[in-house]
Image (cartoon, rainbow, N blue to C red; front, top):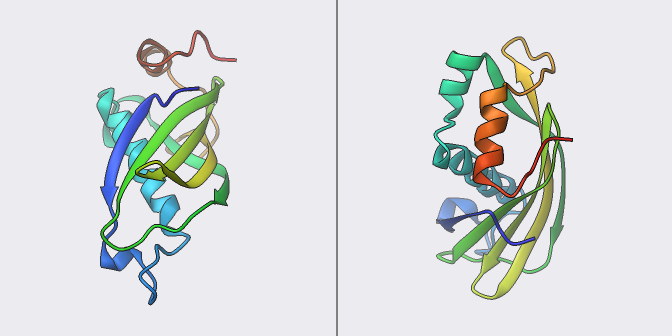
Length: 140
């Protein structure tokens, strides 16, 4: 499936270990930023979702495969696509690339919860916005 969303990020000194290689856990931060910017690109800012719909998106699970290292000052292309969307969750395929070199592949499942952290369905306007912006026909 082609990437639905692309976000670029530069590797800073703070992202690396003593050897100048991106610390493994920082890929999760990069992917979080890409998901946040993906939401923002659809005018679904997280603070607005909380205020207007009383919902939050939280990470339920992550699996990550490391293919090659990123280094200080690299510009990474982060890609995001939806693999599966339900009424209360979305599973993403996210990848980090440096040029033509695949660095990391992650599958991230997020869940929709209310402000009291109880699972809930995504509101119809949110589902509709995501559906109209991606290749998703309908939630599972």
